[in-house]
Figure 1 (cartoon, one colour):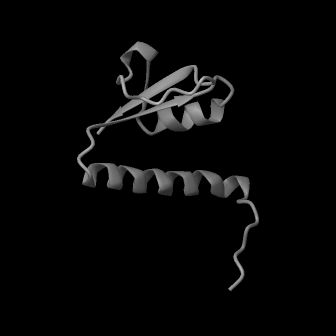
Figure 2 (spheres, helix red, strand yellow; figure 1 turned 60 degrees about the horizontal axis):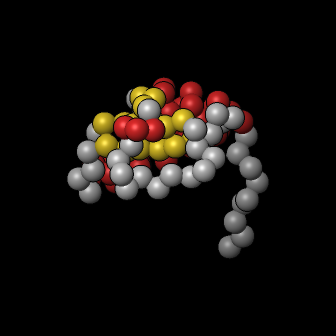
Length: 82
């Protein structure tokens, strides 16, 4: 069966992202995680808004766990306590 690979309409993207985010939280909770951390670049302003809207708090890079896989392009970091 062919797969529809057309891009989402802009109005649909938020709903898809929110659904994927809910699934991530379910998975994280089911596996006993107590927090989620992420890194982003300064340019991803829409992503920053999404993270903050969904409860992530901006943190200093010094607050990241020692095992956090840092990418050279990341300049903003977030934490979500579960």
